[in-house]
Image (cartoon, helix red, strand yellow):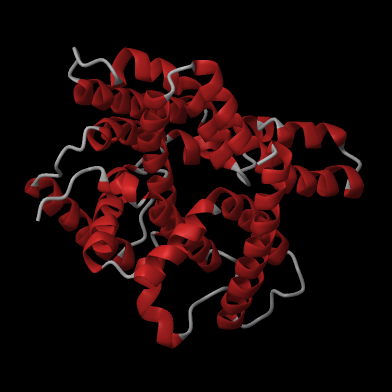
Amino acid sequence: MQISWNILSKYRNELYGFSILWIILFHGLNVKNSSLCKELEVLRGFIKPGNCGVEIFLFLSGMCLYYSFKNNEKVVQFYIKRLKRILIPFFIINGIYWYYICIIEDNNILQFIKNITFYSFWFEGNKLVWFIALILPLYLFYPILFKFIIDNKKLNRLNYIICLCVLTYILCYLFKKFDYQWYKGIEIALTRIPVFLLGCYCGVLAYENKIINSSIKGISLIIIIFGVGYFYLHPIGLVKTFRMPYLLLGPSIAIWFAICLEVINTPPINTNLSKCGRLSLELYLSHVVLEKVFSSSILLGNSAVANFNKYLIFVLCGAFAISIVVYYLEKLILGK
């Protein structure tokens, strides 16, 4: 059965939906004194590498930008569209949260400005919405990447992308040596740049409907089997390894999850994952706030299993409720 790279574009909303749910589950296990019940302990190996869902996010983001820019190469319109999509839900959800925490509770306007401008992430290690602090500069950089590498058929584009990935890891190494404490606060973003670059290249393959050859399918399946198995058996120092294990694991999971959706074709699963995918940004922004609220609330008790269950109810229900409201507010603001 021949499968093209375009399958990733076809099922992008489902992949976004799967990724955000995976990330939310992962964060649940990282809440203080939280654990799975015995019946669900078998899922630990699946949930444990759940932050790899961010790699899928970034991989798909890089891929989809090629479609967006190819269909409309006007840079200003590209920037306006992307900034609206990111900043409107960001200001509604996180702006309100930080306004309450920084100004109403602490009367600290300066900290509010630092948070809302991402200064607190890049220079103080506040990781609440590090993903947005990373994706915005990547969007700003993309038109340059598109013009000189991604859409330049005279070049061996894959080689240039690999060189950029290697350069990113070299810079990460140098930053780590230069100021480890500062690097430790931002490595969660910097080490994710290569998977975005890889997605940018795969966007070309998807747009041109190139076939995913058998060797790529086989290698990616092996990466998934050994990758998830390794994470289940061994904790891995992601800071030490520059998160390189996730560079191939994230795209591999995206490829095979899309193949499964194509082959199995279960409409209820596809439809519900797609709905989650359309709200994935809002779900991400709201769930990290709710996770922080939950971690410091009276809901957190002594039972680790109960804490995980309460986290799922509080965060999932709350995140979906907030996301739906914000989604319609966005439509109202944009006049759609």
